[in-house]
Amino acid sequence: MVSAGWVERIKESSSEAKVLPGILRPGAYFFNGDEAAAEGAIAANGRFFAAYPITPATEIAERCAARFPECGGMFIQMEDELAAMNCILGAAWAGAKALTSTSGPGFSLMMENLGLGIMLETPVVLANVQRAGPSTGLPTSVGQQDMMQARWGSHGDYEIIALCPDSPQECFDLMIRAFNLSEQFRTPVLLMSDETIGHMTEKVIIPPAEEIELVPRRYTRAAPGDYWPYVPDEDLVPPMARAGTGYRYHVTGLTHDHRGYPDLDAEGQHQLLWRLKNKILQNQKKILSFEMARMDDAEVCLLAYGCSSRVARSVMELARERGIRAGLLRLITVWPFPDDLVRDVAGRVKAIIVPEINLGQIVREVERAARGRTKVVSVPHAGGGLHTEPAVLQVIEEALR
Amino acid sequence: MVQRVMKAAGRDVQEIRFCGFGGQGVILAGYITGKAAAIIEGRHATLTRSFGPESRGGACSAAVILADQRIAYPFLHKQDVLVAMSQAAYVEHIGQLVPGGILITEKDLVTVENPRQDIRSYAVPATRLAEELGRKLVLNIVMLGFFTCVSRVVDPESMRKAIQSSVPAGTEDLNLQAFNKGYAFGLEHGVNG
Image (cartoon, rainbow over the protein chains, first blue to last red):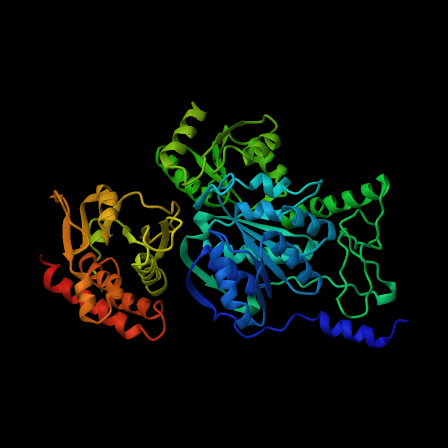
């Protein structure tokens, strides 16, 4: 039943998507983080956006509403966040590169369908511009309190990829990377921004489209009759089938076998769950990204991510002026957590200081990874603003005393 | 070549706050200033904003840091220039203005009681100047013209370019007139006054 016609069609459509009109001219723009994230999605060939607007993520939806149609894409304002998350899963299965954006309360509502996306192995991007909670909390003020929810918020056991931008430029860059990782590993990827970064306006350089590296969707080379939707390649990631080209497949949130049909026993669960986990963990080196500053001779390490890393960088300079050899480890990939990297740093410094705008979330991972090799100190903040530099500096001085 | 007053004082960082209430174009004023410095002049600029849940009428503030180096901490440590367009905003922020700093108020919207002697203080009838152009709405741009004239943190030509690419299409001329009016008022009443 395999005809040469099919092979031709697949080959033709597997070539890189055409660059559609509406792409911004390369150059310097003055964007806030949300606008930059929206432009990053367009640059990544994201062409389907569904969301329910919420402060401080509204500007992503606003810009996508204006820009996606110009680029041949589609914007849908859904009735709520449950629907928005489900909608992008469907769009991705239909062939689009799709994303949604939200903040705390909406992130909670998306959790169930985020798990569905993980179970169905659906490449989508979810941007969470974090504000302070719980509940409605501080709608227009900053928090980094969803970091553990990002890791564990949906039920069941799984791995997730989460990236934290520290500037509007990185909102653009990491949105593209989020799309690439989602396609490479066929899984939802979280862009964990925050209100400070989302509402901060800075220069954003948009490179020429041909200089932006994009990972195309991984489509099967098997003919329709020979294709199974969950037979993985060597890296444990199964290729997808192009919808509407003759392939038959079944997808379900139930534990399933290679055919996509329910397989409801311990052995089937074992096989699927470990593959879902290992396709991320075995490829962690390809996912990990971080920045180190002045760590060569550091006696104390400031470990931070997102907006808090801006404070940490400033504190590092202030500490250096006072003769304290401080360095910065900025996590760009927060999930999967870089255990080896943190363990290595822990063996080289007297203390790791972790300022974050929550009451101590990622610091637990740092403690776990450090395994008692060094002192790990949490600098909590309840949200609504950034740490002050003197407050963090004081913690460093006390830790070294 | 513009002489930067703050540069003259040996600093390469300027911290500026525009404040008032939502709907006055406070954020746009900060946006244009940051864009002029970052995009037109190639420096570094970080604009942050704070506002309440309501879109109009609530307290609103735009903070801009201009620097020659990468900016880490994104909020103001102090204010070198304060542009206040409401009484509440003036009262809230006047205390953080550094000695030797510049205060610019909208004359009809802000009453300066117990004026500080350690700052340069200007009151601009921006609403009335805007009304002379037929649109009260452009008072923020009139303020921006005056601010550019007396603070000299950004070149006026850079500001004009930033305005042209930031305001709604079709209103460029009106906004440039507003900017020039504020700038001229600054030359007349501000620079030596």
